[in-house]
Image (cartoon, one colour):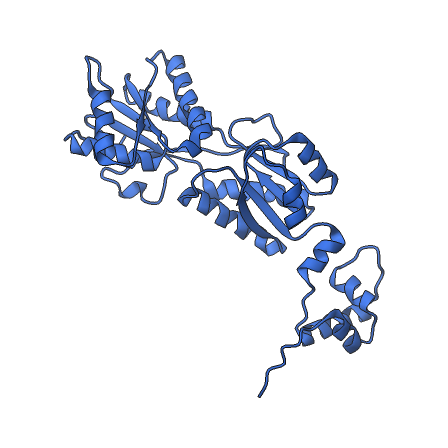
Length: 331
């Protein structure tokens, strides 16, 4: 039997329900300025259900001036497990409200006008400063811009305290009695802004505790190069006895370098990472880390988006993400 692939339209729904196309549009789009009787609404909904009709998302976007898409603007950073988990949780939070999440790479100096023309987003989430004129233009069109910042708790949006991460690492190591501390930096240029803030936090904590400044070295994802960095840390009369790593991946490289040089963790060198990735507890020894609570971060941002779109309850315009020490055997 041939399959009828004819696309069902609002005209078909109107004919079956015995109403005008305008009435179908008013009912299915829940137009607040129109007064439609309960009986008529029921007929339209029943007809739409019988025919399997769903309104065109593109047509709705043209009528409203926005789509049902929330765009997450990411800087040019690696999309690894932590960011992927954030995007998945963020999308899950918005989906029950009929919102679709997409992400795209965007440089800080790129304008927002092409984005609006192409996607007509319902809201935009950014993690870096955007041109103020573009922000004003977008918000003037009713498109909220919700910021997630590295370290600006005074700004509207959600700040993720990168400096506090570095401070927490150093303070934990100092509490274990360590004085000479190293900092294992990522060599990926795309994380420079995050890296600088975390190093600044580590330096500030050392200053406040009366410790020497941390010895910062780049650590590549290579066992031999990581071992070379360890040799530098361990050289001299006062060798480094504890290392803060930019993240857990860098910490794993440091751990491999230490093992190559027959140095034990934490007996010879203590080690602490960041992100509390899935495999951190399975390292040998299990890796102490700082948890940035990616899922909570995603929920906080999603709640801010829903509030700005009048789809959720009120939430503070300014929030600070929660970070937490997860102590294990490595430090």
